[in-house]
Amino acid sequence: MHLSTILISPFLFLLLITSVFGAPSVSFENTTKINPPPPLNASASASPNPASVGQQVSFSCTATGGIQPYSFSWTFGDGSSGTGPNPTHTYATTGAMVATCTVMDQIGSSASDSTPVIVV
Image (cartoon, rainbow, N blue to C red; front, side):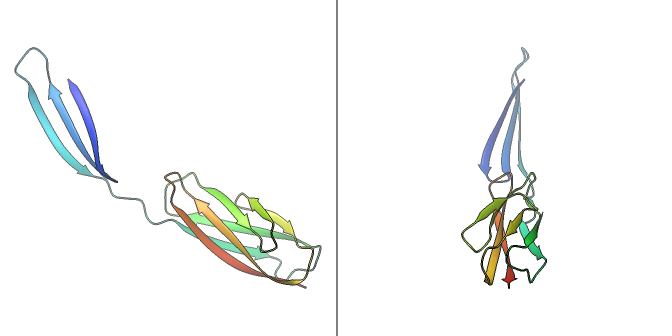
């Protein structure tokens, strides 16, 4: 038996099975559509907010959809960055910051969400 799989487009495959056991060959061909995963979404939050200069801020980013596992990267709005779904960061200056979480899934899809952080 010989098995061939051909990718026609993302989530659409052609499967070809051919029997070769000493008899005239018999083939079976089937095109299968696999439903794509739901769209990847990200949701970011920060606490406490507002925060004081020098106070540690805890961030959280949740992901839904896409295909796990996820990777998480952050920019904190002051030139600093971090990784993971729950990083912490301490701001050194006052201001209205915007922290952004970017999530990437196993197949390379990405989604981002931002949360404002007021530093007093």
